[in-house]
Length: 258
Image (cartoon, rainbow, N blue to C red; front, side, top):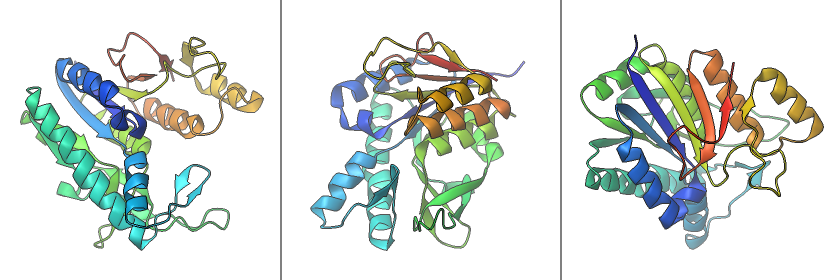
């Protein structure tokens, strides 16, 4: 029987909210057994870019990452956000190690090609995550804290969606552990009514997802999150939960099923 491993992804909105973040880090530190934290930080990157006089350009919720913006996200994700989380986890008794995909070659990607005529710049689509290397770190008693940055093997850092980092990490580690992936954000789960915070959909599978997508119940940024979750369970991840950042115990939220 495989040992249990919990991967928690925390979004940029939670990273910006001190109360939610403090609670999440306490709850994450209390999780028994092996674990990994994956973080975003888009809001902080946008604020830093503004301070530096660099324009933020978005297309359908995705950040256009030109050379100047790549410097910003590398500093913010790989430095400011990542190392603050690592330091705070150390204070909570968790022996954390901050990683980008370039570190120990744990996640390699390629530059995203033009999509519908849009050049996203230095944005990476993941080719592979190294579950063997990550499991060696985990077995050494280290808790990886993963930033949403990857590399292409040719010396280039690439900005990569944090949900994708979490999903690909979970898939790579599913060969080694019984993996539960938790997407934590500012809602209680996937909502059937966006105006009702209690309208949490209990479970979603492939058939449900296609129905909810067709009728508009699920739209916008939730679409790629659920697609990542479904890809993860298809690849052997035991369970994916989408839930409130202050409820990462696995008892609440929306469960994504195969």
